[in-house]
Length: 617
Image (cartoon, rainbow, N blue to C red):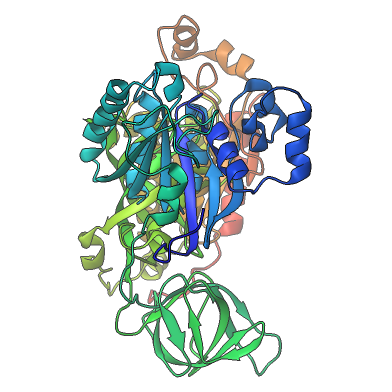
């Protein structure tokens, strides 16, 4: 088929999605086959099996997929229709692999949503369509597949289309082209079907060849810095890929988040120096004057820079079997920048079937929530609706390095821009010098009944006797006041420790030795507490006792209640305890008395109590 002179050209990123068994892999196999993109040896292997070739096998490459008859991985394929080139992603239909669908759709220009004509619009169809809307995919092809199994009923086709259009109307998806087809037989894929004479629209290939994508005006320069190159003393360049706009030699650019400006001295590419570099090109820029630029910064148009903020409202798609825990620190990767970030609050989660906003304390696998995030450092960004590159981020577990979530920034929280640290005349060094001691946090962790509070209490008595200024924060006592609103779910435990870590930090600012006696079951929150403090001011003390020992003690009768099912979310029974891997001090309470343990800790404190630096006292 010849391409009309007016047909658009260029590269199109195409993704397919829908529910399980809607026929995505078969349709993609048919597209590849009819576009002449299947290698002859691969096609011959399919035909050698006898009978009509199973075109789904062209993309279901994993052995596990072939055995189960489903798509697990994201399979990328390339094909041409005339002068237009396509990168096509076959994404999983099963709910378990929604994260793969998000990965593919995050860069897509166009999506093909398959629906089985017999089943109509299903929950997973709605889930994927809602995700497409969140991910900024605005052009949709509704491929109503398996029409041969409903005798090419126009009424059935119209019912499916009406149902789908009614659903996506509320999502802002109004560019929907509906096509009845049979992927298995090829009807209305590349060749018009003789079974649906009532359908006067284009075939799928005709539509893909002719559809026009968004054509925006000139965009401002945005180049996330991926690395600083310095091959010799006379060269310092900043490497990255231009995601929007263009840059010319001599242009004035602004570096974010610092806001400093400089002129582009050279544009260095593999082929040599350039006068101009455009969107999509990877280059190295040298600047004059030689300003400070680091990986994760953004080089931007000086007159139209992106915003900079450290608090956002964003939609988050949760991709991990372990729930999102507000207050827990994750790595947030945005462009080339990676910074610690926390979910401050979950405004609501979205019922993907009805669109209803539901109250939520956490998010589970494949949940979509509207959240507020707080970052440890400001980053350059743009709302996702304007820029996928500077508005889309991922969240990474800081312990396992697993990608656990993907997010789309809506806007910065304006209060973040209006908040400034108030300069104070009296410093923490002044307060510590007045008390003639070095601030310190002694963080006692261990199972309930291990002896944390008993030992911490003895330690504070020893500190008092030595004339040191201290305060003891005990888990049970704090839950009677500051944390009385928290329960014992994992999310509540994370928030419990976050608050205490912040309180402990404020108390070190006052120059105190702070004793914190909390079970604090998760390594990640103990690491977060350490990071809250100044270097060297956090001492993790693991009060260790086997579960059998603390159960035998059971001073409060809590283990018996937990074993009887009366008490839920109890650490060591039905909630995990993650023992420290490298504590600053381990106390074995099966071999050490409370008095002996206290003396060991006091001796450690004495080694940390060097004369405070600075201060006026």
